[in-house]
Image (cartoon, rainbow, N blue to C red):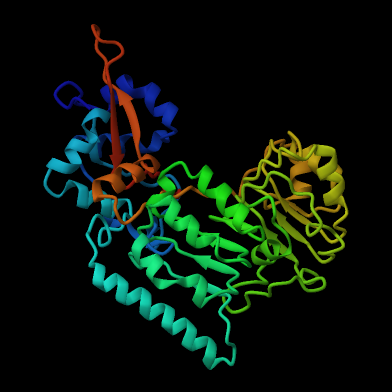
Length: 427
């Protein structure tokens, strides 16, 4: 606001009346807003505080004031960072303290970013971990390990080979190598295909996945034909083990067995299959006969493009206990929430919303359960890389224009408090 040109509240409202109306600022707060803009008063900290949540991956704004009537206050949010897109990385790398400040605001992990690891320490940790798993299995009276998690151990290709995991764990069902430094496709593939009973493999957050891994995936699938989960996605071979994993039956404490038992899914009531890259849902394991008690099913984030809508509807109608369903709308079950409810009259909840409310309101699209997608990074990425990857969750932009340059380059910015608060409304 140009303070040298706008000196009174009347002038302020006259010049910015359209913007005030569009932003929804109540008329009763125009005077308070004018005063805070004129005096550059940023007093949000007197009423709110920022608290980390979701294990430090997000932040939320908490009201610390005892009471705040509706439409009683307006707060200013200053820019924590303003830049042109072409200058973003240069600013992060050259402006002292900027990348650390932005990393803190965005909940980006600073401690593990861009640091070289000690190879000897990594080897010691991995070897010790493997020996501990073998020892724990023997202590339990079981001479076979079926679930192994070697995560975030800074393990490279040479260390993976030296561990000789297929010989030590020939009956392994689930193997997680997430967050290591594996990068040679041939080396990793040759080692993985030695596991003949493997049901699940996680290579997430390894440099190897930054390459084109189609050939690697095909080779692994051919060598491990029992594999049902690959990098958190279902393979075309998924069956009772993958469904049992998503249904809470199989985990590290109960990894299952090499051969399927009779009706292991009978007790499953809640099944979360969201974001599993499922193309074809129709198979022997996913059936009302195998899961007669299923009451809550989440299919969000799966294309299911190999299944005609009619076949999917018929399959799901067979689950007589199903009363809560989550699915993309529009999506594989149809274009409208109303049409889906017509096909499933026994549903109580659709995408977390009461079915009767959907029918009353006539809403066609219901997406109340959508969650934000959080960025992921590897240990090799610098702090600047992590900030650039995470910043899109927080940024907004505008264009500078004058009479000669109507379409100037966009200016991007990030708020200090991420939002503009009126009264007791929340972010």
